[in-house]
Image (cartoon, rainbow, N blue to C red; front, side):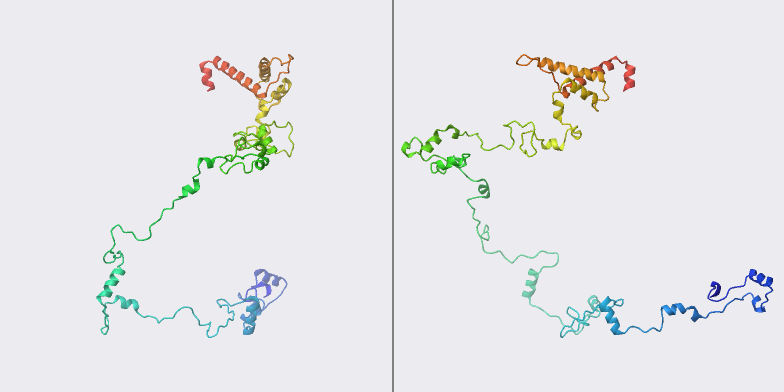
Amino acid sequence: MPGGGDELGGHPASAATVQECATLNLKGSDATKAPNFRFGIKQTTDETNAAKKLIFPQDAPSNSEQDERLYQKTHRDYPPGQQVDRHYEVKHIDLRDFRFGKSYAKEVEGVKECLSGSRDAGGSTDESSKAVEDYRRICYPEVGKTALSVAGNPDVPIDFAFGLVTHRDPATVEECLQGSYSLAEQQPDADLGRSRAFRALTKGFFLQDGSASLSADGIPPSKLSSAFQRFLSNPAFQTQSERRFGVPSIRTDIAPPKKRRIDDCVNYDDELSVGQLLTPAPFEAWGVSDEAFLIPRPRDKLLDLVRNSVGLSYADRPMLEQAVDIALGRKATEHPTTQDGSTQQVMASFMDVLNVFTRMLDERIAQETCSLTQTDRLRLF
């Protein structure tokens, strides 16, 4: 369409176009002066839908049945609503019309006949015997009622019970779990905790209950071997009842080494308990254990700690140094000299310094509070 006009074709001549034609001395026919005049050739309806018919032709041939089956096999291209046919074949059964279940004749107006009171005049009623009706009434009670018991009671005594009599087992479950051992059977074996040499020497000497079958005094010396005689006379083999053999799990019997190896897995009773692991000390996150506060240190080390400690930066520096001297003075009075008469370097722990400093701080606060007037106290609180 020229000039982008609509389907009517053409394009109206504007006033500017007419003025331009007049300037160029162009004369048109009288038809161009009509208000409905349009330039160009008018298109028909068939020409307007030419692109649509080209993309979607109406007279295009449809796919053959063979092509449809081929597309269904290769692309699973089934028409909408078409059932998938797997081409199963069963003898004597037409799968197109086959249905599972039992066919029945369709009833017509069944509810109407049940609700209507009219009866077929030609119908008849079947009568049954009274015995059959009584049996049905007893064995099949009405809805909401309990079943009747059988007529009469069996000819048995009142305290009669059906079934076999339960025989009580002499051994109960409690006795099987707890046992019924005598005091002699509960005693430990005579060779409990003894070495293999003791068991080999005393083999056959003790009975099953632990008592000696033959006493050493009752056997002539000629019948006792020299090894067994030395064993009986050796006090190292004469164990006590409270003695325990083996190595204990927690070695409290030996002192821990000053520097432990990496592969040393022995517990010297210095490991943390479960409570200490669940609730660690306040300074454990900084790598400071509780034992570090109790280590004795000289005066220069204590002064270095109180001057560079982050937690004591708020405190009075001279007051802290005075607390160090007081703590060292108390330790000096407790241990004035050694056993040989020589003087020993006085050392105190950091906890001793903190205790002295806390006591001095409490006394200072108490003195300052007592010196205040009633008005000043009210202002503070």
